[in-house]
Length: 300
Image (cartoon, rainbow, N blue to C red):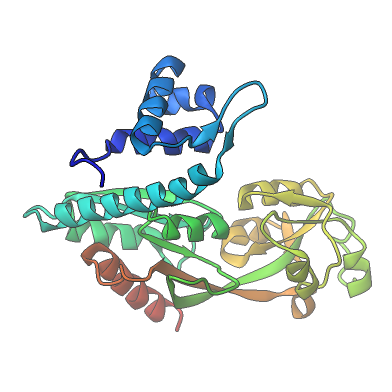
């Protein structure tokens, strides 16, 4: 039976960061430690555990089988510690703490979601809460929720995930656009076949099935953000899907136009997600109620 001395949480933090950066040198900056200090922490951890967690040397960094299993438990423990701290903060009279929320890019001007209004309402209710707003892809949002790195996320999630509660909010209209320097811009009689012959820019998290649903067999460019996608479309070398609200001004100024709306338009369902078992936490519950009320009124 192990002695009463419990493991030092700092050892777990160092270990997880080293794994994240696949070695000591990469973890230096995030930990603000020298490689020698990191090595000492890792040696102390392995001495406490009684087994080697990783192999490091000229051949590179690699977790051992036991190290991989221990990593999973360490991440889970630190997530539970974070949750405990959030509960403790919420019990304070000033309702302080940190609330971490993620959204997809290009949502700030969406009048249905009206994110600035939601933030204003939340801050009025909890002025002492430190709000951490992040822009993340759907996959990153789901992983953040599962790892308790995020409290709530808003986005388009094609499939359901275990241990995640999803609540539908509204649908975002998308059209296929080309710019005023694209060959198709002046031709109002274009056909589907003509459109699909041109280069398509799409988001990196779309798969082949997503492309087929939108009428294309493949893409010729990928991006990580709507801003990057807009830049490529404006180059005149690509067509691409964008949210209607995001390009209203560009369409009005005749720098963009939608191509065959009856053929290529689609609506992306937007939802909010949180980790199962956390939906009744005060900050999450309050934000959920605000989002449901806001989007249900605006989407009518």
